[in-house]
Image (cartoon, rainbow, N blue to C red; front, side, top):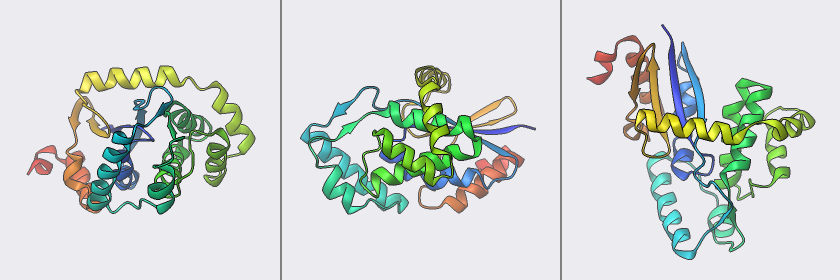
Length: 215
């Protein structure tokens, strides 16, 4: 039996940050592989109008209440209200792919590092130097990471993720899709937002017996 969790995400998606404990929890489920698929929420460099900042702040408050994830003052009272803030998914996705190309086990750590740098510490994660710092914190060689960052094909990856989203009917980020052999199931991750341990138990039951997990 082959069990794969396809995690469709974007590093600069607040709801994906809220789902970080669920993504990490997948790694603790025996026999379950975690595959990351980045979809490019911000496909080009974007400065936020004031109404979008207000919307994001309100969403962040809901995410924090649901998941318990920390949103730091450096982000809420600094980065988020900075009129020069630029959101761009491509460099952050490239960083995750670069980390994965060097060590598959570092991909999720790189993603988590980017998320916490942005949402908790208010760092500008579209900046290459910041991304190199995060890679080093993950235990990757800085020079090797910089080299990998220059050759990974981020556009092909995002295009493949968009095709996967169409195939599985994913409406947005995050989406978790569990593949057990040839069976694909969209995971109701929202019901586990506040309880990653229950999410793991659900996954184990689903992998062992889909009928039991549906109960």
